[in-house]
Length: 120
Ligand SMILES: [Mg+2]
Image (cartoon, rainbow, N blue to C red):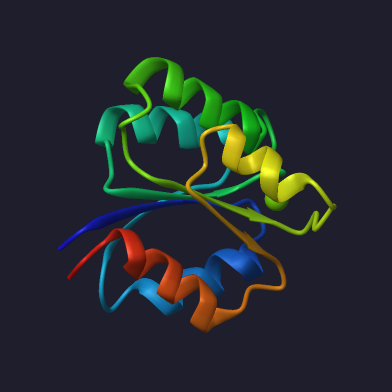
């Protein structure tokens, strides 16, 4: 079973994403950026869902540090963000994210985005 690391500090969003994915994937959870980075490096999950706005380290920083330490071919990262700012999508894709999902989370979109990278 593929392993997904969810890095999200909002309990409501975390619960939603976990319920959506828990039947099909093994889930790892981190609630701030520092914990997310450490878990990503030690566990090397198959995919990371990464909130951009996090305590301790932003999702931008976590993404950048994972790319620096593991390289560009490391696990795919999907940005989760409430900041649907024009240009953010392009910025995310340039920063090393493979995909970008805005909040409020569309469950079908999130699930199909994950499935694009992880064939069960
Ligand atoms: Mg957040």
